[in-house]
Image 1 (cartoon, rainbow over the protein chains, first blue to last red):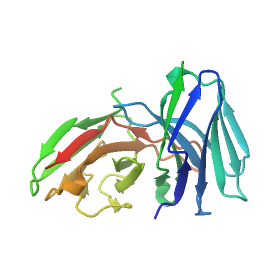
Image 2: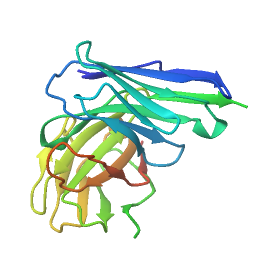
Image 3: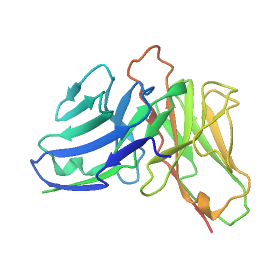
Image 4: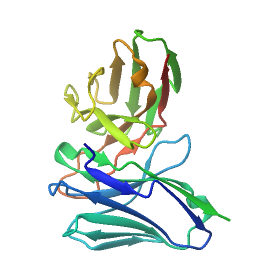
Length: 111
Length: 116
């Protein structure tokens, strides 16, 4: 049973464009929502994260938008660059600080 | 600091063989985790530990065992490997920070396991 649903599975954008990845969750007990970035052959690395009492978090070109009532959150990458090409995972933290991950989005930014 | 390291990087097993994957971290983190990553399924938690000498089951624990005898090490064992356990295995660790603060899990580079 997938508790965090992520879409799209893959995304292709032009350099300079905006990349948007969406996630939805069911468990209202989740209390922390991170996004991880993974390059081929590497482990995931934390990119940005948000708490549910905040509607938006921005770090450089990366922004999380959070809609608590809809139980949805999204990652926006502004001015997308070829170096942003990677797989992105949303996640949600539950009990014992366990993370439940979405299925991942493979982003390709064309030069 | 090396961060989180995993041994081995690659392994091919035959059905029924056993093996142990080793995870080590040098950041003095309390929490450690084992995940498997399969195409289209993200990362799924196998087992985790909240401190030395403790272990607990995650989402997909069947067919795996773990041990945390030392704080810096977390071992994942496969007693009788099956083709369904072909996957990339990631270990992660995190500090025990109070409250709802930034809670980052630091991942190792992964072990690619193939069971034939």
